Image 1 (cartoon, rainbow, N blue to C red):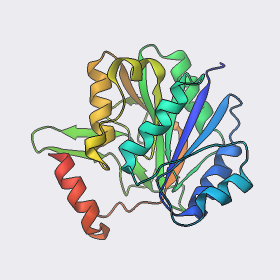
Image 2 (cartoon, rainbow, N blue to C red; image 1 turned 135 degrees about the vertical axis):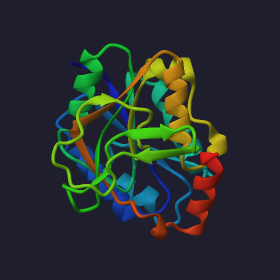
Image 3 (cartoon, rainbow, N blue to C red; image 1 turned 60 degrees about the vertical axis):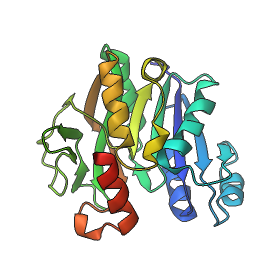
Length: 239
């Protein structure tokens, strides 16, 4: 197993979160790993601090906030110009278990036609409460849900095919991107990964959830805690 993985960490401020995320990436057991940080016009010294503490990282700075889709597309393009076989898009407000990438890559290596795969995502500071165990789309009601959100993990969610993977930690093969293209920048943020996953599925690839890979995400699972900008983009993009 020697697939070259490019982990793309997107950030817009929140430098302490970014540094913690990079620490978890530096601690991965998987050896064939490159890290790209795309800074979406942060105003909190992210560039200087990341450069000082993680000189091995490929750091890209955008002139404006391009959102999740535009920022990650910048990192995707840079990674595809290099030797990446697999892309792993990672939000800066995540922490990865040391074997997270290894478990995902093992699956890509052994299961034919994998285009997208994602880990079990837990809530922040709790490795037992689920944030996302893969995604399901409800086409009738124009909605997509993170399976298992708020449940205690008792092993109820197994390795399986899914409709989408939460964008906080989504692994995509080069072959899938070559066939289906990159993220649609019109979404800016929210549900763009759902659209991407469906385009990859329709291009002939398969999408999987792998619970043996684990990470945490600092994001609310309660709708009442969402801010107005989040509600706007989630509502518009869901439709």
